Amino acid sequence: MAMNTQHFLTLDDLPANTLKTLIDRAIELKTMTRQGQIYEPLKNKSLAMIFSKSSTRTRVSFEVGMRQLGGGTLNLSPNDTQIGRGEPLEDTARVISSMVDGVMIRTDEHAKVETFAQYSSVPVINGLTDDFHPCQLLADMQTLQETRGDINGATVAWVGDGNNVCHSFMNAARLFGFKLHIATPKGYEPDTALVTQNEGYIALVDNPNDAVANADVVVTDTWASMGQESEKQERLTDFDGFCVDAALMKKADKDAIFMHCLPAYRGMEVTGEVIEGPQSVVFQEAENRLHAQKALLEHLLT
Ligand code: CP
Ligand code: NVA
Image (cartoon, rainbow, N blue to C red):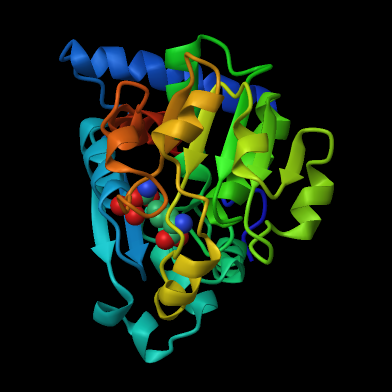
């Protein structure tokens, strides 16, 4: 088993000061890219990408990010590899990591990325599991820093499902020092162990109005994540009253921004008016996946 390899399975894999340095670096790399500077510290390096779930942003940002840094990617889907035919992850991890410089994985159970990392001799990056989406939070923290100037001391309102993105927001609240007010319908609260771990930074409420009061950021996500398609109808009923609409945004700070990791479902978790409105930063947030992950790749692979 490979020890001492730096992975990124949750935000907690990196110290808070390193995470903050990554955000500053992401902003720098964004400027360099905009200026057309060629910067290729990952020349001849390869990142294997294993997607067991769909992706637009994560796929494109890692692919283009590696290319801009001078390296390349391999797109592996379980169906085209022996993973789909049941080769043990322990074997797959040892084989793939013997030939590449990093591995990005998007899958269902979080334990799978942990097992892979345990047997990988190169850094493993979590590109979303059922429990966490740490790369999303790097881009979100970059976006918050770009728009507000300072993340520390901000108030963020999460309205919706206590899901993987919500869990990573909870860790971010502690590591970046902001308050997170979480409003979910009953039965859709985030993981209780994470609630305890992030005590002092988060507050659970069952009413979206209470969560958004004076918030600097209002954030939501789909009501039915990948893998929960069969619960969609039931969730539509259960999440009644949790749509982020203009009336809810008015209760937040007047300069509040609206964030969403995307893909978004207009008329469900957010109205078209809010996501297309002046407070929405969702496309800046999506672009920042590229810059934030380039900072992460530079940190992990050089
Ligand atoms: N936000 C996000 O991870 O998007 P994709 O599912 O398109 O990668
Ligand atoms: N919570 C969503 C995020 C998609 C990027 C999901 O897991 O499907």
